Length: 191
Length: 255
Image: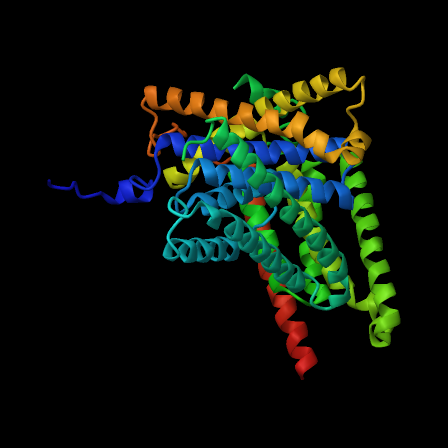
């Protein structure tokens, strides 16, 4: 059977990588992550360690479910890219760290791909999220260091915030894993 | 786009009515240039120009609140430096003088961020995305995200009300903290189920309508106003001036 050659426009638009339904799902889960952080900021009284932990836990649980729903190489990168672009559009955040985070997440995805890929080994979702979120925090701390390089002591606050949010990520992974099992049993996520 | 207009309700066009692209560009330029520069005098040039931009585009009360918030955050950061000073005595003596440049960088970023965050309507940003020719892989999910944030927020409010009815009005943050597992089961799990169902229905509707990643969302070519051009010209001037100050002071120190 002859295969149709893809045009540059089709490659640019990711044709063959993702279907429309998968892109819509990724978009909706990114919206849920943003909405939950807005909601928690409003109810939890802004920036405090507990809100930070809860916010990160919800976001990582959402990622676990998303990777179970769309188990493809590129889902994590796309989800991270959408989240960061949205933060940039709304608040101007992550301008500097965006390329580094993107490159880091792609590396994690490539590693997972060589280990067999998400579709064949669903458990890879947990180490993928844990390592990519750690990478995001390390890069953000690095960028923050560039901003406060004259007085590195100011990094203490950034480090504390990053530590609390990573704790939340780890808690969320456990919650997300349990929830994914239940959703599979309920037939909402197909194997 | 009715749902979007609810979020946009509190976002005015700004006094200069700049285009979203201009504000985004200024944000990128401010972030990168403030990181590259290190001399306080060079950063002071950027702070002055960005403050002019913020004053022209933001309400004075909002600006004052933002600056107060920044002052509180900086004080907390300095407190940590002071505490660290007991462990490393060298750090204590230079805490304030060495913290000037980081705080100036923060001020530049905040001045560029406020007009973007307060005045750019989500609908305008969504249209700007269409014009930026982003890959369809990013454009389609980003449009879905922007469109559905208000809808999901509404879903969350309804679920919270349901939790309040079930647990006799206890739906606040304290309830979440005291019973995190119950909260997870009665709030978060129904939200995920609702989300998965909505994703399936929406995806089916999108496919039936023939929506594909390379669908053009119809962004019209943008024409920049006089204020847009003036703002870009002033920002270029600020960068050149700050760069010259940085080079001059840097070479003075080395000499």
